[in-house]
Image (cartoon, rainbow, N blue to C red; front, side, top):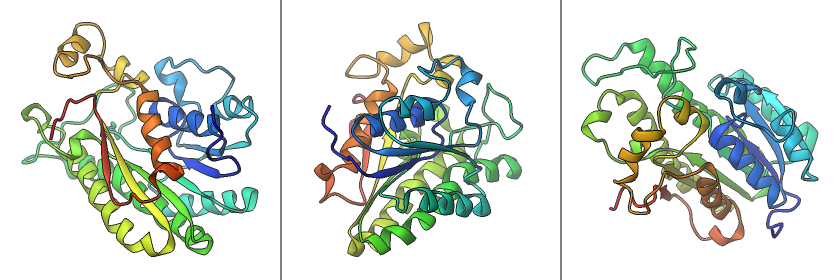
Length: 273
């Protein structure tokens, strides 16, 4: 595989498992040194996700790249600022930021199950938690990364949204907070792209749909449930984390140098618009 981003330093948030881990490993494959962030760096164990080494950082080092892990809650400004100071101290720069941390998560810490946040009756504590995990974390990391990227006059930022931020099926109404947070991530991407374009910083977004991550499979996206979804997808299958990682590759290499402020759907044709 071509080392398209050799010598670059990347940060992937929420990279302890699932999509984030796939992004981190893929960026390492194409040459980057990778900082792995997660609120729990051992989160792969929670969903039975198999690693090829003791940690994601070790997986990356086994590819011949540098990697450090930073356990931090990216919805908290003090922890984000400390993380970026550590990155600059360790590597001297940051070239790529992938804001993957987020999800329709349970604020009470349950491994399985998401809160019901209906538009007319959502509990504000559940709503605020989902907004912070998905939107506030993205804003805080983008703000912190923009400082060294402006100084370098170069950078690639990829925010991770969702098909839920682009359209709402009736059955998704109960996930109002997640839908709204991901829609906000998409529009924040556009706002930031407009500001940072003059600094030669590209800011784009990827919106995955039905991806067979370890968490999704653990929560029921398998067997008959998976088949019900697959018949709605023109390409006839659920996506894999690596499918989305290839889109991220496009957005962080020179192939996308003239693209900014865009949201790319990684959905197998599920949303044809």
